[in-house]
Picture (cartoon, rainbow, N blue to C red):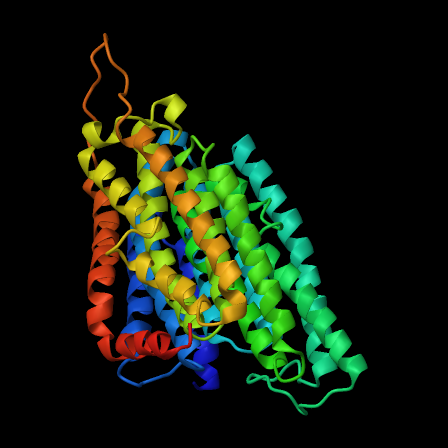
Length: 481
């Protein structure tokens, strides 16, 4: 990757965000179209080898960011138009949403393609601040409180992450401002190893706060449930995963100097704790967006487990970044549609009987719910299977895999119990007659295409990568279990 490309993609998106301030409100869709074309250009030119990411992980995450950001921009048009009409937003507030939303996308693109740890920290800070502004954008009491809590908790984590990163890299002898970080020497004194390990743990706590790992997740349910639906989707699918990718990159650099078992065990511990928290709270949720917020804690925990297990499970963790992101984007967009059509996403305030009253919206909710709990043949099933099966590859990890599998089953039961409350519980009945709810095509179409991605990814993934799939399964079979 050329140095220019490192700055052109996020810089170009930042410049386009300012275009929203210039054009009239009626022409905002034109700027959104240019943003989509800009992201599409870099996606198309990637397989043509006109540019390359800094390694397979950077390329993989950029593709995920670009595709889901395109869907976010697409869905934001009709969604924000109806939100603005319902809550009487001023033209300046509407423009402000698109400005900060595009800046948010720019920071996520930087998270994908930058490799220097200081600049990655800056990109994550920009992603945090822009998404916090977007969370407070509805300017209601709940959204402002959620945004304030989001900023206080995650900015404290950001400070710990920065100090930990500097301490760990300095102790390990890795240059702080190199674009391709590496160790200057492999053998460290016990004192340097000690400080490198302390720094690594500090970085994990700080970035784990940004990622919503338990027990640092306290900001996440409120922020996800109060933010506009497209923002919640990118927060859950991309920003949380981006923080975990920074952790993985840092631990990979430190692995030559610090015993990897200490780093892996920390990832496994926080991953299991996240599953415990998700399993404990999902059963009691009555708001659709809050349900998917706690589900995000579960899936970030699974990604952390895969990174901690390593090997085949690591492949599953990277694959899960995509499968979770595409499924959760579908679900948060769907929750936004529910909130617009029913004026609430809470079962106690009218969001009921969705499958009968709005068949398309209900069908997409059922599809996304089946995918996110890991039912075959949907895409998340394969990545979750790789994480858990890869954990069995190491004898020492088998107790953790058994615990994780049990928690995944509990979470499956919790979601399976809650979702029918939205789908099948009868809605308002009796006089006056309930008016039919019209489902706008502008809201349904982006989610329907996402649904096709979820189904096609689940069915086509084993076929598309059959040689790699066969190799991974063979590796499991020849292992002395």
